[in-house]
Image (cartoon, rainbow, N blue to C red; front, side, top):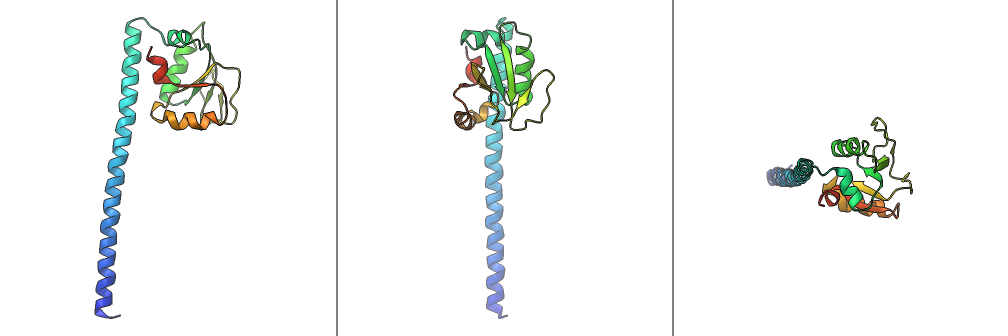
Length: 157
């Protein structure tokens, strides 16, 4: 191989590595921004929920005010579990089931179904991953005609 060819290959490799490194840095930075927004939205949601509790406003009151009595919880992560644990004590609200991409999850007393098994005997699906509400709503719209709302909307009474 000629000396000029070797230099061209080496310089191309170095430039490629530099561009790859820059892309990785930009991806990590955008990922941090997305995660920061996600956690900020959860933080604000939980603060509002705790303020309501201090004012003796229960989560069930928020659902009743919107005339949602039979509820499906979408997203059985930590927030979904908190919603279920509060609503299961309600005499006014019935949690029909949970829906999650991982239908193998287990939460005592709650039947968890996959996204293709949404029952129709509910007034609303409340989406607990609020940071991804629009995307989830779009997916659910293709599967059901039920009302679909974000937990942020429920709590903003």
